[in-house]
Amino acid sequence: MMSTARHELVLILDFGGQYTQLIARRVRELHVFCEIIPFDTPLATLAARSPKAIILSGGPASVYAASAPVCDPAVLDTGIPLLGICYGAQLMANLLGGSVEHAPSGEYGKTTVRLDKSSSLFRGLPAETSCWMSHNDRIGAIPTGFRTIASTPACPVAAMENPERRQFGIQFHPEVVHTPVGPDILRHFLFEAAGCTGDWTMSSFVDDAIQDIRLRVKDERALCALSGGVDSSVAATLVHRAIGDHLTCVFVDTGLLRTGEGDRVESLFHHRFDMPLVRIDASARFFASLRSVTEPEKKRKAIGAAFIDCFAEQARAMQGIPFLVQGTLYPDVIESGNSVASTIKSHHNVGGLPADLSFSLIEPLRLLFKDEVRDLGRALGLPEELVDRQPFPGPGLGVRILGEVTPENVNILQRADAVVERVMRSSGWYTKVWQSFAVLPNIHTVGVKGDERTYVHTIALRIVESSDGMTADWVRLPAEVLEEISHAITSELPEVNRVVYDITSKPPSTIEWE
Ligand code: XMP
Image (tube, rainbow, N blue to C red):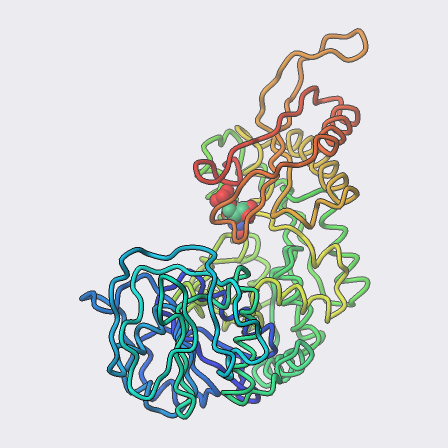
């Protein structure tokens, strides 16, 4: 695992709050490295990391519930500066001898809060501001040694502090954008109360990562499945910086990628960055395995299996390579309880390799959030149109064609997809949305072109906004942009005479059509 011992570290104990990852992102935006760890991490493990501060996250439980998550009470006695947020603040109150009570009515959303500016947390901030609240319980009696430093009409103790012990509890959420002074509060806690200096930057991350990779790989070799997406591209580039020709990238052209993808990958990584790259044209194999397959799950399985076969064959042919580079990101690591090392998510990530191929994984992005990976890509000199790319599913266009996937269908969809990307980029919308793409529902409808009756394909447009792909909403794109896409598709593709717009959110739909 990537070492961070050279940097100041803040640990965030995760009590299951919906905003825990946001806390981490806000702390890192202040150039302080932080990690999210389970709430029940033993004190010894925690102390061994020598954190500059500990943050107790929010969480859905009530401190008095039988199943309430509780950290080792000794964590509150280490002398390490402590910030409790929402549930974390209530837990502090409870464990330190104060009390928590059920509020007569919960407080949700934007709320006006009065701040005591004599607290170091609120120095220089307005006496009254808005904050984001989301709670049923509230602190009743504050523990001995504490004083109240903020309040709202429904929450007399909206924040409390014990400056001597450098312990703070806030009921509202400083990590959420609806708390405009949130970044200031976190900065005051980290830099003044906890004495951090903000020593974590992208260039220091690159230097450390390169050093760690070199130490691990030594004179051995590493393999990387390069997909052309942001994560594998950034991971490969970083590892290549560290070990040069000892890294070989394998690009499997499934035939289900966007138009020109293989050439783009080859020209950037092989020709421009001079990386050893094996490009496998496996499209015939993928189309063969997809023949007559129409059921979505069977399609996904067929594509996944063909991918693993291709990659495994290549890996065997290059025998004796002990390391495999993966573009695993921090949210996956957190979601698998910090033990993702050997779990690999989806097919395109080469999960499920045969038993005779056992690799040690190098996951140089495993501590980074997606936006940090994009910054890292920029720092490594990757072109903006790669770094700003929207997510693309592992099974590729295979899950955007309903019914049988044939070379002819893929060819139509590739050209429609290229039009969508072109217009989305030229209108400035491409980077404002989560995903924008074309789907081929395999429906023929009647149309008229010139004086001729046509009976050809329909293209569906799927353009959604989302923050993590788990939920999504369709984008209210200006009619002119929709019109431009529709006009360009129907004029440039003789096989299409109709374009429709998908106006469903997720749930009840999913983002992809299959
Ligand atoms: P759904 O369709 O489930 O998609 O709403 C959510 C997000 O995940 C992407 N997606 C995939 N990504 N392998 C991937 O790497 C897959 O098999 C896969 N299926 C869906 C999808 O594009 C969206 O961003």
